[in-house]
Image (tube, rainbow over all chains, first blue to last red):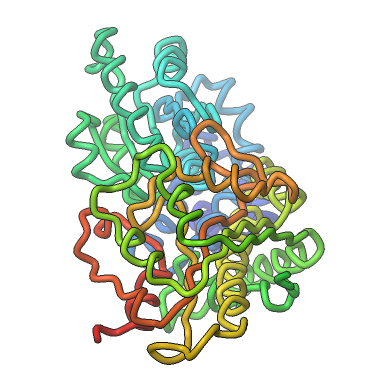
Length: 211
Length: 233
């Protein structure tokens, strides 16, 4: 088994002790940081994401894998920055104004980072204007919004409308999710995508970002 | 007074696994089982359950239910509570320390944080069931009509009762005394809290035909249980 396959395998198992050690060994053996990232860490997370989508594994396994991915990224990050390796794109995420629930949003953030995106997490209770301002300032490609209440869902439309008013609709795409949100609602408010769960959200963000 | 024993509230591991998406017949990995064990240990150490309950008449509850007037035009609860034999306003929380620990873990050990969150959510559901059984255990006044009474908790945000109903519920019940606060969106903090009205009466009063427009969006596991508990007469 090649060391990249071994990194991927250990990541799938959620072994957050072995992954950073193997990443170090791969680098010491002369592999480029980008190759370790793409063919070791991200390859492993892709397998995990697929198995989660097919319900062969469940959420804790995904999060353990993500934890191992982060441990590996800690080793790689200085080298990636030095080499000027760009992420797959910036994504601004948050739970909309009035909503304090952010577990689902946190899970999406973890999965997005695992997929190689740079995630700017605005937390919960985020007003529409802040989503848009941060996306513009940080040149984000996607805004991801979460709501767990029917009463807070309208903030999602406010964000979509505000992007349109500021002529950012083409540049910044939107994805929405949360228990009361549906694909029909996403279409109704003009959002670009809907994520049923964190695995699907990541797939949609990849499409939106063209990554 | 309702007594909440930690053992009654602690969720069964299988319920937590199911809530986290483990498919029936799939064996959980040893690492995820270790996470669940640690989450249950944390739950036992941090849960600080507290509840407040207050009997109300149907007339008193009508004012609470009306709230700001945001209820659905056709709300099942509107037809259920007037036929109840007994109504109690109810609120419960697992306390601030547990919620704080979930938040803290999400900033570091998010895998454990997510499992602890699922454990706490299941425990809050269990608290509602304990409260329902408590109400059912109270003496039935007069000659019980329609067999043994069943009690279910109905909450703002469900069954056509607009979430803004929390405001009137809080004004009547004062759950602030046990540390539950309401924000401008009518969300409770600590997040692992439940509130509503305990409606007890003959089982048939709870019968819900899922024909309301909002039923399609509802994710409450209690609803199906309600329908099963009270088959059509």
